[in-house]
Image (tube, rainbow, N blue to C red):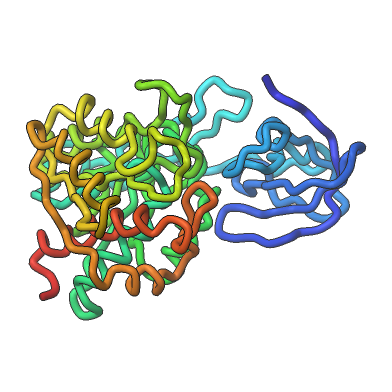
Length: 361
């Protein structure tokens, strides 16, 4: 189940908040590795490291790194301070964090009886790559003077450490997120919570967010079956947002560049998550894409009309907004030029959210 290797660090390639990318020499050759200093300490060139090379051996596009499990000759100091939530529970790398909702947290009293997000729009997407595109559409529509506070609530269907996401690091650096909240088994956000529900409540009542965007971390998992994909959590997010008095806004996963029929047009992930898993009503944003492809998207989205409110949103001007993204746009290895529809659909959800807030023209 795990491929173990011992290697030696030869160089630090780059780093961003929470993560360090390394060059490591193995007996069979060199490789890229990723270390999370909060878990293993800070590795340095010359250090011997223990690696998990499973994702590297599988050639995973998102997780194609060896992961540093330990720096055995220079262990980090024991953690100090409060924190009793255990994430990645009962695995060799289980870690304790301070949960915003636990008794030792300064936010416990705020969240103890919190039961509503006060009508806050909650934008829900299948893929992590939708996050910056949603923000591009939202901020372009809102204008610089009306920019809302946006929190990202990261589900645990993909990567567990929020530190893995260079997108999150870049969006925070540019002031596009007021914070990242990791929920379930995910960890490493500005706030950690036990459930998506307390994550949404923390977004509203601790971070003071006007909008929450909910999506899984990088590394969507799919099996080519009707139900075997991690994106089913998007449907559960609709339910959570609704039960807490939020306004669920469902972004469709759309692609004109994916060669797999089940993902061409509106992905079966969106049709299953919103059409079967979501029991509460959401506003499903249908991008007004041109030509036969746009008509296909509208026809596929129409199958959700019995369960949800379909909101048709024009996409004119959104490509320019996407080109202004402060972070790289990429989905399954495709950029804006290779899959415009994917990013336009997400940006349209952001544009609609601005309208819900009464922002822009």
